[in-house]
Length: 352
Ligand SMILES: NC(=O)c1ccc[n+]([C@@H]2O[C@H](COP(=O)([O-])OP(=O)(O)OC[C@H]3O[C@@H](n4cnc5c(N)ncnc54)[C@H](O)[C@@H]3O)[C@@H](O)[C@H]2O)c1
Image 1 (spheres, rainbow, N blue to C red):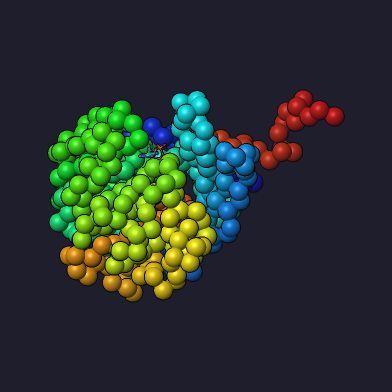
Image 2: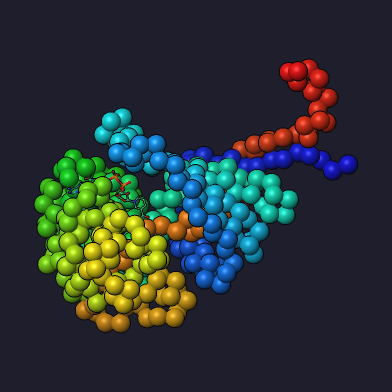
């Protein structure tokens, strides 16, 4: 008689961190492999399911599944976005969990905290883009926004571009800049940090790499602040003036077809006829697969926008799961011991 035990591994955020999963190189490999796998038809990626609980605040929970057929693993990201959380409750906006299942028997193999994976994915896509599109001698990175995404992006960019020497940061409140500098200088002490005291132009001064990661809906980044040769990673919604994209020599997205139907700057431009399909240089996978060139000269200004492809999150989660298993961390979760009608105590438990 086969055992009907079903077990899976639970990894808290702390387990994943202690296992060494905040590893952008690992995530870049996983993301590049995921993009290539999708490109060759190896990924099942159905439409996400969105449940919005408040139209005004856009409080929502999304369910985003994907299957890597060759790896025989199906996963899902269950992600909550509650924009009022920070201001109203002092809590994070985004929180997520991931479930992975094997597809031999269809049983779950992992239940994991997913905010870490989700945030790592955002930074990793920026880092992968920077690998192909940024000047490899970039020294100055400038941030508009000093929140969770900005912090992860700094770790990712420093990994992709070890030449970075200075980090400038501008946010809505100077206190956020101070916190950013305190937290990030402890992690990357070799960087020189400059807080711009909410003067966003100052934050962009001399930036080879520009990152906007804000909750604003306004054209904060000005085209004239972007110098020739700069690489721009756009993370938030509408946060740059249209001339930023217009003056760029190349525009690259994680997936243009996805990007153009959303609400960030490039999508707005597309919907208003200020940008067409012909203005797009490539999707990131075209660079990863070598179909299209990345940066071709030192003077090119390049714009990158990723809105998120959940199969990449699942790809990174699989890499984290393997590393978590190797570490021996996490806990065994027993999902079931017997099949329902095999339980010897079922007569006591059933409520007829
Ligand atoms: N592209 C993606 O895949 C992806 C994934 C997750 C989140 N996001 C988006 O990234 C953005 C940032 O997310 P987060 O978690 O870091 O948010 P957060 O709340 O932690 O930080 C937001 C930052 O925006 C800054 N900001 C807001 N208004 C500003 C203004 N007028 N001037 C200057 N700075 C301003 C704040 O000072 C703060 O530092 C959000 O828009 C979020 O929806 C994108």
